[in-house]
Image (tube, rainbow, N blue to C red; front, side, top):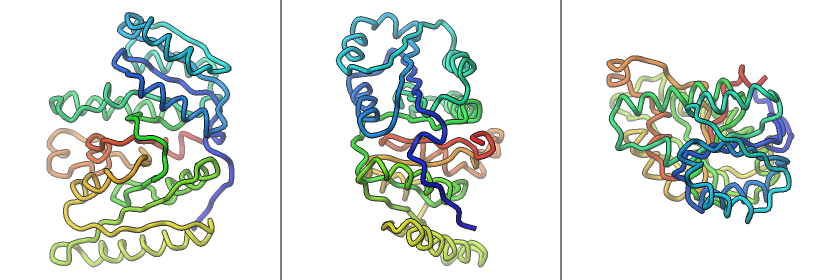
Length: 278
């Protein structure tokens, strides 16, 4: 059943932004925040300065004051990222519309597997606890071309609802990347699911009276999707389908969505699990 709402993003969640500063952020990070405030109905921003960020306070202060945010709050912390953000969230739950993190500080595919696994757990746990979207900022704005990968683990309708809500503020092009199942190794059920997905996307476009590009890719879903993402500005996925598994299971059956998120070079918006955002 297709359902949809017409509330401007991110007001379904709130209008306050939390930006965690690890100390690795550059001018582009602050430019992206400035862009977000110029296009979305955001009212307030809270900067959480880690110990390393405090050491960069003079440089960061120049960026923050330059952007002329109307309603700004700054906090210093010695707590680890999750605890620092969770502490702030607990103060005014229900007011937060977006959490912004530097993607370079958290998603680095060159780290060992164990650290990579911890980053997934961190983002998954934070998404559930915050009950609001998380932006992994990579500087690929303006968001003129927005994309959702239609792969296992993504609630495409939920993500599309968010994309259409964002379209009230953005003059953007929307694409849904489809990966065609192999004729040789795919089951009849997988092929049927692929055809149903194409129909559902077409139905959503009719409901929203919008155009959705539907490029069809072939091959390994992770490689095919990440290879195509270079042509887009913003990747949007939900975290409700992320798989929490052990090391052996992860090797035998990789989490497609997570591998796409950690490998992409464009800004990424993570939508929280639906039960957490209610």
